[in-house]
Length: 335
Ligand SMILES: [Zn+2]
Image 1 (cartoon, helix red, strand yellow):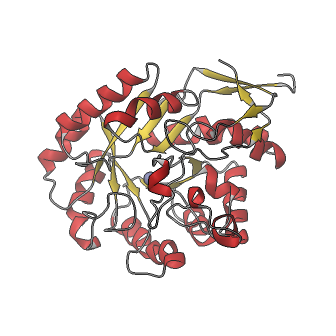
Image 2 (tube, rainbow, N blue to C red):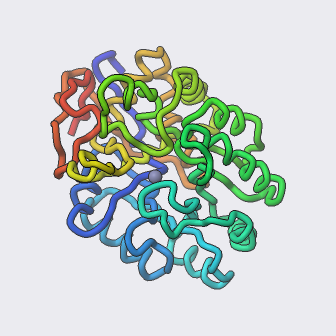
Image 3 (spheres, protein in one colour):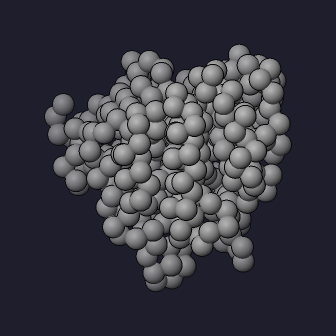
């Protein structure tokens, strides 16, 4: 590599929202500009809960963005039988996603009583399905929701020692420390925006609706802990962007939706973040190694090449304001 070219294994995104209907094709193509494989979250309407629907959604995504491989999830609820889970796995599901009730987009039908899903989780452990957790405690104060949820992770690990658990989109030092201390069956994703921002970037000056996400951005020391985890080379921490497109009008309104659209810019931004921290040597495993290892899928043999040249991020993509809109980045993906 010369210092003006960066060759990376083609990244995997282990947490993405691609929506459905009219938006899907554009969002999937944006993802394909950065990633070879994406773990697609199931919180569309209606949510992904049955095998036919899961296969059809996967087909739509891969047809819209040739070259992009969609790894599929289903939305966890207490109603699945063992037979249902076997059928979902046979249809290609790699993980089930746990949403507590009401904490994020389309989670009104999420889980209120944690205990109620434990029989389903036991079956997921038996079948080798990964449990992805949106780790926020619904009733808690908004800045404490992640910390308050950690007790459930400890309880799950104690009860299901072979269950693979991913605590999604970490936002606090407490969560980083918990994941570090828990066994190797527990790993975590970290988004680009949680590496970049603190609560100041949302409300410290003017209100910045396009930085509004769940879990909320936190304190500088939380961001520092997330960065240290991402730069550490600890295989428990890997990329899941939680890229979540909402049309501009859904963000710039009296009750704006939570979500940051990072898919179009994720990798050039991460290169910049890791380079500034002198951690570029840790980037390949973070974006294209540890996640695949954890999910038990082969590391990619494809490549992404970036050039050190200025790239102006558009103010809007498919009607959505992307992360870093209007900014000039120092790296460009070579097509
Ligand atoms: Zn998400």
